Image 1 (spheres, helix red, strand yellow):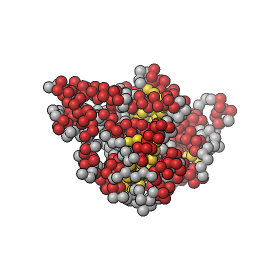
Image 2 (spheres, rainbow, N blue to C red):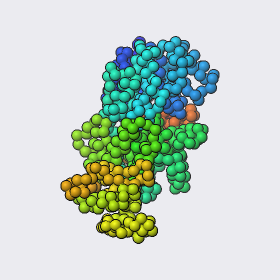
Image 3 (cartoon, rainbow, N blue to C red):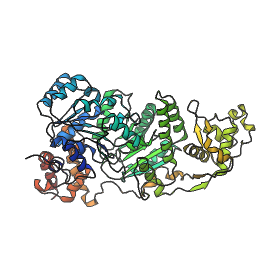
Amino acid sequence: MTATPHSVLQHTFGYDAFRGDQEAIINTLVGGGDCLVLMPTGGGKSLCYQIPALVRPGTGVVISPLIALMQDQVNALRELGVRAGFLNSTLSFEAVRDTENALLAGELDMLYIAPERLLQERTLDLLSRAQLALFAIDEAHCVSQWGHDFRADYLKLNILAERFPAVPRIALTATADARTRVDIQQRLSLTQAPAFVGGFDRPNIQYRIQPKQQARQQLLSFLKAETDGQAGIVYCLSRKKVEQTAQWLAKEGYKALPYHAGLDASVRQQNQQRFLREDGIIMVATIAFGMGIDKPDVRFVVHLDLPKSIEAYYQETGRAGRDGEPSTALLLYGFEDVVKLRQMMAQSTGSDEHQRYEQQRLNAMLGLCEVTGCRRQVLLRYFGDELPKPCGNCDTCLHPVESWDATEAVRKALSCVYRTDQRFGANHIIDVLRGSDSEKLRRFGHHQLSTYGIGTELSANEWRSVLRQLVAAGLLAVDPEGYGGLRLTEACRPVLKGEQSVSLRKENRPDRSASGASRSRPAPTQVDEADQPLWQALRACRKQLADEQGIPPFMVFHDKTLADMLARRPQSLAQMSEVSGVGDAKLERYGDAFLAVFDDFR
């Protein structure tokens, strides 16, 4: 009998119904059409090409930049009974030959391949001799110069349309604004293909953005109050900060591991495997880590530095809560982050247009940080998505921000920037405003300025908030060429002339900076006290089966599947097959082991 999308969904993946646009996308590919898919992390993008690859004759070829994860992706498919393989630079000559022979013999359902290998003439010739079901271009934002993770090899992937015009193509990404979408379509020759844009909302993620005060203490307070030994990711901007933060967390008693591109490849691989397979690991990483990570139970993502764009922020926070359970995204940022990012952008070798666009994206990120209304509404609007009402699950909704008439303080700050020749950073400006008795101020003669000591009514932290918000609002600019000096912009002229008032946000008290916002947040996968022994026995069974095969526990079953199993209490393989997430291959492989657990508790 010919497989249908619904039969594959049910028997291979163990689910009864499609979500959102999945069915329409799958039918488009099964019918031989191309498409572009934008769907949030955890929204089920992979099913959109995996199911058509299993329904159509031939092998589905997935182009992915995630070489370090291909083995895990293939293992996950093999657990489902799918014949999967990969080709990349980590394989031996013999392994490459065996995989190529399996492809030509029609013995592979799915083949993962890195773009640089795909573009080799030898590989293109190999694919031309195989029967191909489709091409799936994953992480498609990498093709765009406007995307946040540009890869040069992706620019050449339009060769697929030229060399394989009869093979349907699907490009997928979780993050792309309107400009990036157009770029993807043009560069991949998908301008005539339908675009399926799913809603970007991840309602289970609670967004929180707070100013840095004592970042390590804020992080520690958050971990102690909310994480309860659960898995999470902490992002830092520099490799040095990654290593220092991981070492510090380890001293504080947490299972923290570093990850950045400067580490030895074997260390990165080992740390990544521990994160995927062990409970309660905190990965401290640069943005080199995370793309394609399919760990469903990451409960929190913390940024200790400001991301350079909303796209990057959304992509990185989206690694939390892929299982749909409540999760937290906490960002701590300070004025120094803005200075550092401006300097990095100034050193870019990109075109003037590209640098201007990068500045615009950073400005949008700053705007999200300083907004007084619902953060989720601002975040979604950036991607062209609308949320009619405030979400009720971000810090500004849970603890509404107070604003104050800051016009007089703003004029003082702008005047001080002007009178110090628009070349000093925030700390110096604050010292002048507060009348600091410092040698540096005397050396420049700034203790004699008319603005010296006119701002003693505000604390240093309050002035820092004012200056940060003025940069976000475009009334001040940071000089990227120097040491973060502040400059006036044309937009500040009406304020200085007394023609425009300014309202700024009041910062919440420090005790809300990390843990306070989520006290109403439910815990993930809640299990009644009476069911805890059985729940832990099911988890132990899963862990044992995973360890025997050297795979992460979630590849056996996700927590949601165990929770459904716990609710149904199956007593036979037929009843076990009705559990969400239990397909035919896993039923055959694991069904008896889990039924034995239930037998022990009857």
